[in-house]
Length: 280
Image (tube, rainbow, N blue to C red):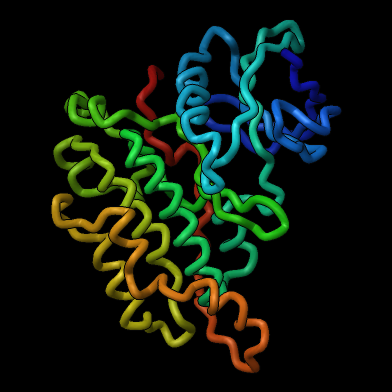
């Protein structure tokens, strides 16, 4: 089977797992997928690659979802006298949602609905297949392609439903600002922790007059119910009135003379904010 040929470029970011780099490719078509000239490499020392190996297995489960970052596989390279394990990932030319919020400080209403709906479609796929992401936040939502489709990325802390139920007391996963109460208090993990994190992610956007629409406020309330058994699921939220006709809003927004905007404070996050289940 043909290998994906690439050449490592500039560093895009780094965290506890290792380094993310930009890479150029020489394959126009790889395993039936048309490639752009750029991909992202998520790399770490091979001797500490177990988490990345588990992540590629999860990503392969969702290779047909348009709302989860695509993984082209993994390989090993020898660079600077070190064996590196590399995840070969779809490159997000639009950066992350955190970058978008930091750079513009405001989003059109249709854009908020569009990104929210796409993330929910991704979460529906993830949660209905028995996986809990455990680290939904603006920095892990990537904007891909010319249409800036929101895709869920970074499954480094993800667990199965069974693992979530058997999570050891005192070991918590995620980024503190987006953690559900049951995770912090009781170390409990279910798909509902991803919904809470989604609510925290999209709680920031507000109208310039600092008032959310009634539909938007109700949507957030359904995400941020403290009792996880009463918190709405991804599938339920996809049918919420806040997201209805979101495509129609997107198509007509450019023709409006007066555009309502969401004012968004910066949500840039630091990789060190991630509380990760790994040895120090």
